[in-house]
Image (cartoon, rainbow, N blue to C red; front, side, top):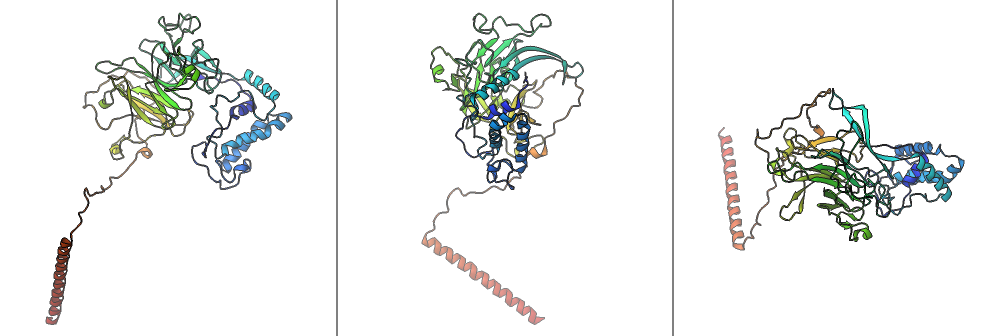
Length: 519
């Protein structure tokens, strides 16, 4: 799935993207670290020379950006916008940069820029609207016959394109189910609070945004590029799109089908998704055909839009688990472990959070139907001294995956960005118990690749080498208080020992003196 941006105008984008309402804040820079006093005064963002988030190097970058944008201004535009542009760019240096503007505030007017005349803003918006667009594109590629690690880029066929009103919330998964149908998970169209229409995109079944879609792409060499499965839930509803399988999603990020218990097959086919929240909660859902997952009426278990939330016709499905933003701010959906190597993990739904870096698990209580939460703890440094084991990882968890045997992996990066230049793939291993040797066996599918196979070699800097410390011995009981009699006896004992020692010393000195006289 790819996002295809169109052309855009520099000046309008810079202004419209950054001017939003002030939010409650505390000192913090964009890298989530505290502000500082730069070693040299700033020449462009001079107001932050004594305390802020920029050094002289970053100040120079912002000045260059200012010149690059302002060169597109005519004289009237420069007069109206130059000071605003400088102020906006320098907000990166503000000691409150991380929280200064609330870009997720749904009440922010989208088509006006504070401090500029209304006529000018209307002109900017009209030009901007023509030149800029966002789309969710679902494409089909053929694997290169000589290398299964690459695709034939000339073979692309666009199966489906969905226009978006904003650039974010693009959705986060494309899956094939056991029924051979293609499942597509789309975001609600972006911005904050799903402000589109009376009920928002996610609750509107006539749009493909904020949905789980199901289509058939088999036998599409001739005729339509996709077809509608005959049992899709809304094919007989006149105002609904027939592709819709479930609705009420905000921005589902990573979904997976449960393989089922290796022995009983219990749970097979369940569809788990992590749905990224708005201001307060992240949630995990089990997606079922035709169901409503609540957004924008509900965020997690709580009401977001009170009018929609109290509507008797909502009939939404609550998540199996939701957690507040003090634990994490961007859920990354995972998998139910069904591998062989770590039997204690069987049946656990393992997932994470992109921002906080937490690894978490949910265990189903079959009697109550509830899911019990546990945070996954890394092994101690001593446990992970064995070859190939580590107990720490890059914080920003982007995705999870499973191999042919059902073993689980996750990928994370050292910086919170989807465009991070590198990352690491980790395998999840239970160090407390493993399956007996020889019991786990899988026949991998043959793979033909041109690139050489690279064996796993853990990076030394990621391994925590902690020597075993001497244990601190703590007395289990306090030393009992001594009576006066016991103190007297102890004093007598030590007095006797002292006198004996002194007598021995005098005898030794006398023997040495006598020996010298005899010599």
